[in-house]
Length: 358
Ligand code: SF4
Image (cartoon, rainbow, N blue to C red; front, side, top):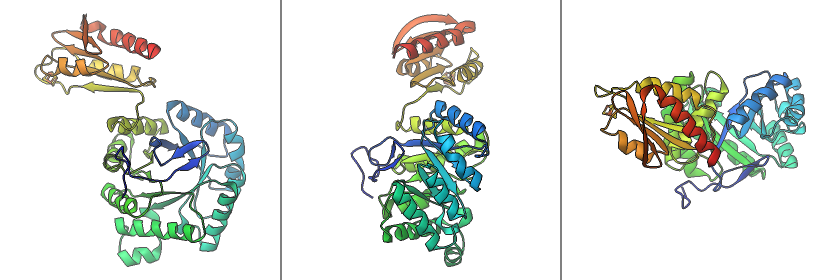
């Protein structure tokens, strides 16, 4: 696997509308709507909310003709590239491309035949849009399953590479690859194999990862482990719940690895027997107050003088608490002492000023 100067795996660029995936572009955040796609009003509304939260590419399910035919109307009301998610029916893929999809996501293994996959590739080539080859542990081809016995990492990688080779054989290289599994270890290993074998951009995700809380942790482990090795060009955190939570989790993962900078990162201590201020209450209140902050900022809320001043000093804005009070730091400088009851109010104001002036 060849790596760039930044330590990321070298991949070639693919454009989804005006968003670039791969090469030296930032890791792109995606999500998927959970509305009925042919309910254009609700779908557009959700895409706008997701886009405001930071979603950069949006995918919609296209299970029928009406959904495919809705894509044009959806597209003209949004400002992020639109991806059509297709299973089983190649005609829906072709119809979606004709109705303006910026990318098609297929699992070639469930499209029915190579002839049908080829028809999709020809249409995508005609409109110059990419196709994501999306292989999932839940829908592997029978011959691969019987060869490997179970949907492990090698089986997933072989399935994906088989489809990639078919595309290449037919002169189609506008490809993004994803190999997703609900087993985090399998997902990590499968992507490592793919990363060694090709330089197509890779879309990362742990599929069916679970609820907002557990799914975010499982996704952070799988996606984070690969990103930390330089593998991955775009990510989707799949969660059972409001897709806005997927975007928040995605940026937390990317912020943690310094791959993107967006929104507030709160550094707070776990509290212990030394804590004499309600750090937990302050952090909970602050977290809900800061959910709409988009510019990057690091805010530290620390419980005492052990690590408090050190962390607060390193943050953009920080408070090191003492006995029912806190010492406010701004860019490493001590500003003032604040009584406990005013800590959230003062931090909120300082963060707002920071947002307005940076
Ligand atoms: S910063 Fe202080 S209060 Fe917080 S966990 Fe560490 S020692 Fe305990």
